[in-house]
Structures are given as C-alpha cells and as structure tokens.
Image 1 (spheres, rainbow, N blue to C red):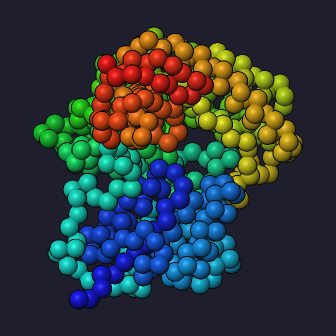
Image 2: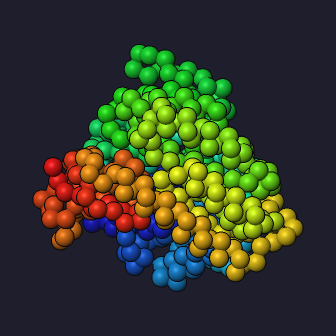
Image 3: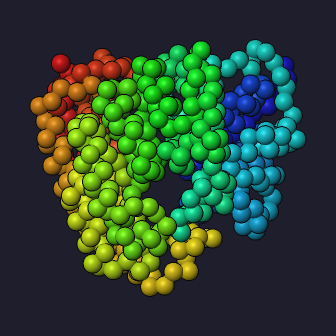
Length: 437
C-alpha cells in the first residue's frame, strides 16, 4: 500500500493565525494528506509564524530552526513571512516562504514538494473542517487585515487593509459549526467592529432574508444560532453601542473585548488610537445601564515612548473608575518597522517592568472585588475539562485561554462541552469556585 503523504504543522500567534492554520489543514486533509503531531512521522512541516513583537519573531525563527533540525523540509507561512529576507538569512534552506492568509500559496508549495495521493477513504472531512480548538468551541474569523495604522503595530503591513468576508459566507460557516456540536463561537478579526466597511455593508441573502455585511447585523444573525457568541477585538467605534441591547436580550454573550491601550489623550494620540478616557468612561457607564451584566475585557500598553509617571498614574485612575472585569497588560516592546520606534524619550526597561507590576497589582484588586460581588449567584458555565478533582469550566464572563475559570470540585461525571448551573461560593483574584445546583 502506498504511504499516505503526511504533513506536520506548527501554529504560532493569535487566534486569527489559528484560523488560518485550520483552513490550511482542512484543505490538505480534503486532498488526502495525513496530519502528523510529530516531526519524525511527517514528510514535511509547515510553520505558521507570528511577527507582531520581537519575542514572537524569535519564537517563530526558533520553531523554524527546530523543524529544520528534526525534519529537514519546512514551508513557512504567516505574518513573519512578510519579512522573507530575515527568515532566509537565518534559515536559507526553507522550501518556501509566504505571507499571512496565503492558503493557495501554501497548498501549492505542498503539492510541489509532496504531491497528493487522493483517496476518497482517507480524504473524508467532518462538516466543520479541521479545528485546532476543542470540539465545544471555535474561532470564527470574519475579516482579514486592518485599516488603522497604530504606531506600535505593523499588522497592516503584514496582513494588508481590511477585507471582510460576505456575511452569508460567515453565517454558513457559523451554522455548520453549531450543527457539528460547537457550543461557543469566538468572533475574531483584526478589527471586528469595522466588519463590512470595505464592502460598503452590502446586503446578502441569508435563508430568504436580507442581511447586511455589518457588525450589528452579523451579531443579530449569529444570535439566532442558540449558542454562545463572544465578540473579540472590537474597536470602540460609536456604532458598537448598537450591539449592547442584543447582549441585554441574551442574543449574544454580554462580553466585549475592546483594546483601549491607554487612558491619557497625549499617549493615545502618539499611538494613533481613538477616544479620550472620559469619553470611554461615559460609554462604559451607558453600556452597564443597558446591560448590567456586561463583562468588559481590555488590553493596555505601559511604558510607551514618552509616557511620564503622571500619565501612567492617569491610566491607573482610569482603571479605578472603569472597573474593567478582565484586563491584559504588556510593557511596550519595539516592533521592527513600527513608527513608534522613532519616537523620543524611551522609557527604561526597569521602569516599564515596575509600571507593569503596579498596573497588574492594581487590576488584581479590582478583579478580586468584582468577583466577590458574584459570590452567591447561580450562573451557567461551560465545561472545558474534567480532571481527577472535578470539572474546570468558564462562565459567560470568561473567554478561553485568556480569562478566568470556574472550578467545580467533585463534578467528575460532567463531560467537556456540558452547560451546567453552579452556585458560586469562593473567589480569588481571577478565578471562581462553585457547586452544582
């Protein structure tokens, strides 16, 4: 019997890159390729890279080197692929280098170096395609690229300007995932709330009704699937306010991931980010009036070039007033090709780290206080894992990998993907403990 051509795969970076990996794997599997979890059993290896910050670049280059050392045949794709010269300077023996979301180029390169052997018995695919997430949740990517040019970011140079998927295409994928048993969709893109702008919000037919390729309309239609729908990477445009009533009605999860990045207007201007902190505080207050249970997640950068102690203190004050539920923070890191690299008054590394620690300690207190307010409530949670001690789950307030968890001691009979009701009994800074009811 002829050996089935086998591909190894390394997927690095953000959820958007993970979706790219899933699409490549789905296409290869449909053509009869087997997928190997080890270098040794693969005929060649694809590395989907990240190039967002210097640490991610080094991780990508190291992964390429490891794949070459342990396998020898490597195709490189992803964001770092936009810097092919840099990759080939370190690893000249790679077979091919492509940029991000380059499905056709990657597959063509695989065909060149490892021709397919199509067999209808080995090419069968599940209807949802190949997924790298657990069966009960999936990322739903609605667009590529970004029209913004934040000074700390090089995403537009790597992934291009905004290119939205037609809304009916997105909804067909979402429905397939729901029918395959997915309990939670995590909507991702570089700029989710700009969805459809490039298509002039064109209307498409979806099951006999007209739906616009627009953020609100997509959210409303996804709400009909009767599963959890979670919105990520939402740029704070004014029209974001329109989706809050959908959350209050239970159509989509009361959860918004909005990367505010900072609170000081001068720093925001240097970053080329919108809005002032006072405007954001007013909107947060209005959102909570409409949907009191809304969970707000955000990310921030400390130690941006020129950030003074007073401006950092303003950020801490914003955090106190905003009372955000979930927060990530990163010390500013120069990215090759970013405009911010040329800004004066760099903040020393030790000051950046000290501000990061103060920021996270400040937010830990806020988070702990907010979680204490939930003690005694009965909430629906989604089971992610069952271990010897019990079940590990998430509430509506928690996205996988980045937010908190709900631990249910002794609940070993539950299954991954179950929705269950728990009474919340204890909390620490970020996680909760509860009992089944």
